[in-house]
Length: 98
Image 1 (cartoon, rainbow, N blue to C red):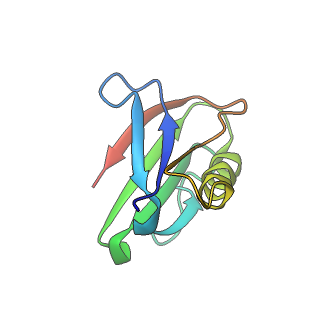
Image 2 (cartoon, rainbow, N blue to C red; image 1 turned 90 degrees about the vertical axis):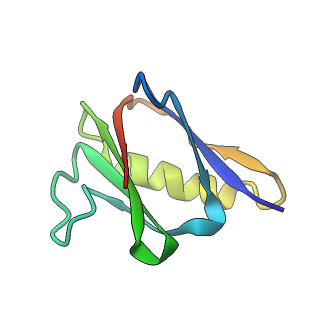
C-alpha cells in the first residue's frame, strides 16, 4: 500500500504537497546543493536516488525544524496511508519540484 506525507504551504500553485514516503531518500535543511546553502530558510527532500528533489522555502529561520518535522511525519504513522507534517510555527511560501 502506498504511503504519503502531506505538507501544507501558502504557495498559490501548490497549496498541498503529497510526497510518496517510499520514494524519499533523504531530508536535509538547506537548498539541497553540495554545500547546503540557505539552511535557515530552506529544506529539501531528495527522492528517487537523488534524481529529483523538492525544495521548500519559508521566511523564518526554521530550516532544521521543517526538516525534522518531515522526518517525524515519515516515521509517525507506520500503518496509515497519509501522515501530515506538523506545521509548528513556520509557513512554507514556495515549493520547487525538480
